[in-house]
Image (cartoon, rainbow, N blue to C red; front, side):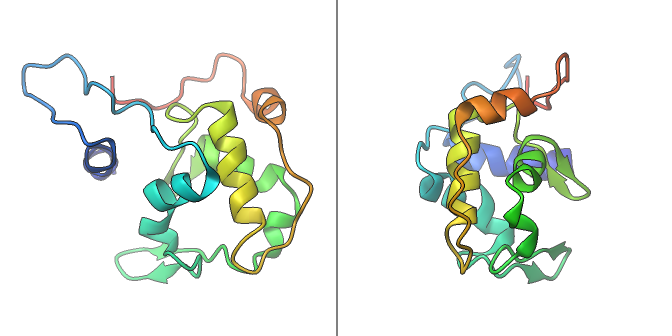
Length: 136
């Protein structure tokens, strides 16, 4: 799982890792700013461009028309901490970026949840002293 996440992040971050490097420079953050950009860079590889999910080497749930997204806390938790095969991105995304991608998913793909989350909402959902996964 970590190897897959590392490979994905290297491709998305556009960096080259060297065997003698202490860490993967630039791979612990994403430059994308908008929810649409973040979704395309991070989420659509598993959840598909249309948000309908996929079944293959694993099961990737659909986000399209997902009633679970009615509660903004649901996708916030998953983006920050992950679950099962989905890694958490809390160590890679800022509070603003998490809010952007959550709001994007909740207002696209047949979802119409307009109670937008804000960066302060994300900040208050981060667990104190939680050690987020990073590539360092």
